[in-house]
Length: 128
Image 1 (cartoon, helix red, strand yellow):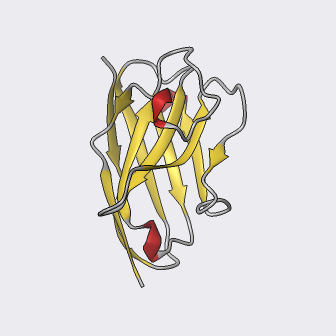
Image 2 (cartoon, rainbow, N blue to C red; image 1 turned 90 degrees about the horizontal axis):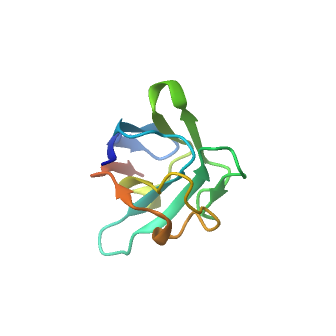
């Protein structure tokens, strides 16, 4: 059973940066659809960014974060990262990482149906 553990959240001022980490404590990071999602108070969870760890395609980003957020991976550390720059108050949310099945689909990475495993989340708060 895959377990995902997020870390790196915190409170920053607008314009600041944070890097979130998602560690696989069990299972392999390889050949999966991996995504970051977020949920703000009173709002539905939304896809932020995603990619396939097998390298079979480019990353996808929500329009609201394009040019500011970057997803990446470190296979040696079994970790997926979310680098967030130029943060805005509207980025305030609980951030979750999610993983699909090995060799599973990833054609619409921002859609939740690709994902079978979810972390507990890490809170990001951006003040103006």
